[in-house]
Length: 272
Image (cartoon, rainbow, N blue to C red; front, side, top):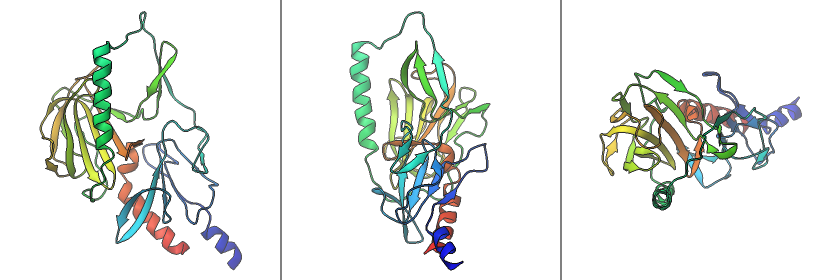
């Protein structure tokens, strides 16, 4: 019996979401064991061992975080990717629209600006679970990871969730942090990016108005802008995303992140 308990102790520590129809988003594991469970694209792998350069600190304990890219195939870092049906959004145009050369150059420069921001490693500013950034919304479209095809060709993957609402509806900071971006971009429109520390960033795109400035410290629940349709948007909505470093993760993870970290510490303490 003791031997069996040791085996259980050092196998995968796995917790899934029970709300919003999500499962298998976070995989916990210890002692370098290969996974016998699976993790979703855009999920997180947490460990007390150093599995990446990113880590959360809770009660003086470092919890290493390995974000799973949305583009991975069957395995990532020796962890099995859940065999989910990949949702595909197909768009057909009679004539394929292409950005002009000046736009292409501008978009490239804007991507470089954003990539530089996402390399920042600040102290921890966030506290507790993240909150939904819109209260008076019409609909939440859970389209994270959707594969987008235009005229049969891959155009990319949707890297956040879309929250529809009336133009002018207030948008709130999902957690506390420093505003790193508050300006207009070609694709994202009026864009706000908040640095929450520990490599976590939240992204708010297609805003009508921006109500913060770069360098501002904002608190969780503070108004940072309003819903719009600026940039490449087909209708009024907020594109909301979360990154850990440069990797996009499913935002729903962070609506329960504190709870999941607490559970991880509880389970891993029992395994040591």
